[in-house]
Image (cartoon, rainbow, N blue to C red; front, side):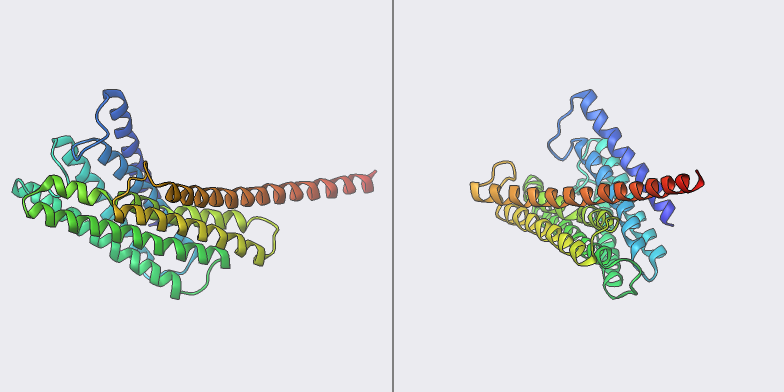
Length: 293
């Protein structure tokens, strides 16, 4: 199932790229509920997230992993397909109850979101309570990433619930505006499951002691957590991430710089470990040649 998840994730990601190309070629709008931006972002995000979840959960023992991946993958496909379908039909995909078919699509998208949240919760519980099947740094990274994914999917569920309530009250435009305010938090939290496990993977391939690797990982976790909190405050208070107050902007930049710095240190350690390995191999080969001579 893991290989299938990678393939399906790749197809979803490709569909997102295709819609980006369509937007660029046609000069279509990137804003609004009818924009092809939605199938583009859904395809890119769900494709990347599905492949990432399949990869990250391979480092920990997860009970029923095949079933959970199947459910997560199926819900991801349904979300992307339905959003793309409605975009090509020229109608909104969410909070659209104009016809029985549109209502069915909106409710199916909400149900798919529920499945995603449930599977993410089960993944997280297994990652926290399951047997230790990876390095300490990777276990911590996967656990944090899964918790952040729950925050992202929970935010998505809150967006849908708020939007549905507004749309049912007869103001669909307000539904898109209200729900859209939480998009930055949803996006930032969703991809922690990729960033932190990749950081742990890099650190595990350095020659540094486990204590030092763990300290660097926690520095990355603190930086990413700060970024989630800052973006979350912006989203909840209705502040645009493109026009934040000075203090908020500084906090975001500091968190990003710290995260990039930790990643750069991890890359340096990986390169240095590779250089040391190559140097040791070359020295041993030279010694063998000298002995032969």
